[in-house]
Length: 227
Length: 94
Image 1 (cartoon, each protein chain N blue to C red):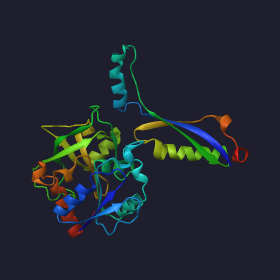
Image 2: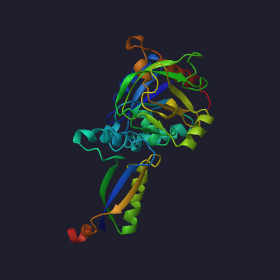
Image 3: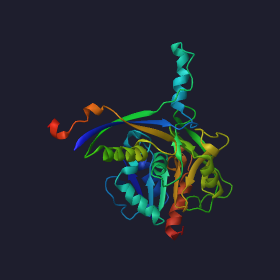
Image 4: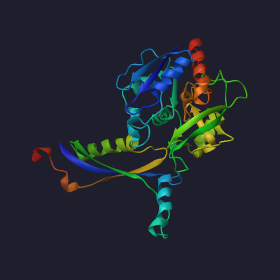
């Protein structure tokens, strides 16, 4: 299982994502955004940070980086893609996952620990999460308020594409509709979430719950789980 | 080729939460102003397009507005031609 972590100008969680991927048992390489080559990656991670300084709108300028055409092809072939925080914003702007991330309803940059309920465990992103377990991870974002027009949101829910929700006790940090913290595309092979699994990948960091997502992906890649 | 200058105004759609507008509104009492409400904050992009004609120039701007400057899911936009008098022919400028 090879993980490719895309580095945009302004990415700042790329090394954490490489480290966490290796902890989960993957071979992990960096992918420079201007080089349209995924280097044989089975899973592409778009990491957190502030790609292109978040100018214009978070994620929108990164969407047009040369590597994104390859990420789009990879997704169209059923390849695995995980967007974390700013990476989720890039996926949403690129239309690779549904929705938009608005400025937090709190008017603040929210940097704190949250709890996530895992809505499905039959996905490549969550198959290693034990039944009944919720996940403790940090969020750190100014634009994480998940939005989708009402009808589209109903369809998203009905099709089981909401993968993570903010749960008690900390609750919803940003005003996201339906407490949504992470969603999947229609094929179930592309996922974006605002919390940072790579920042919760070792007990030393306060939680290693995030590693379960990367372990799920490593297992999924190893067995070539179909869409 | 001629130069055509446009302004694209982008605003959050009605009904979409606009925390920037809310933050601005909340600061108004500090200015001693209590008569202002419904503040919405958007952005304005100005640009010049080199094009053989106005129609082609406008279609470039329309594309950029919908694909880049605004996110159609959450924002609406308006394109207007500005500084028509300054749309001079490149040959004349040279």
